[in-house]
Length: 212
Image 1: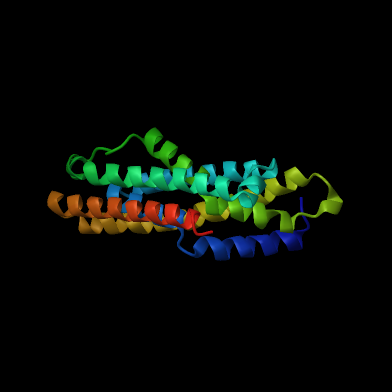
Image 2: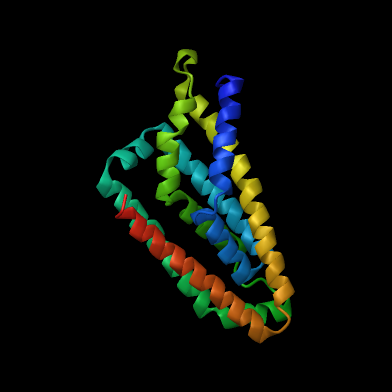
């Protein structure tokens, strides 16, 4: 375990980065608006596990490669952004089904599918990979050894903060959706708007990948 002072400093840095709305937050809000509170929280779980898996990749050197290679960074950005565009398109396309599911009180999408999609988005977020590659090692005490274990511990700290923060955003978005969803026609429009948010996010991720 790194020195407690370094852990606290890393937790503060992580919190400041996490609370700034980024891809994960906007994706969670889009999911909450499109599919509701439960879907948003499942998405948060999948997304956070995906980011945590990315931090493990950093621990074995993959994240450092992405940080140093423009081609690798762009490729991850295109894959992640393209996947977001697809998910946004799917939300727009199925907005009528979502409205119908709300009226019948059924789940518009299987929980496992939502978790898997959140995981892919979290893992293919190039900004999180670069953050872990560039920031995580700065809080590791090399004199104590067990570098990989220290990185995993710090990644767990980041994971817990991210789950709490993104989960809050998801609950807020899902609650707002329920307040606004007084008629199927209205929720259809809201779901479509959530899909458009995700599409716009995907496009921005792709653009940022080429403007590093």
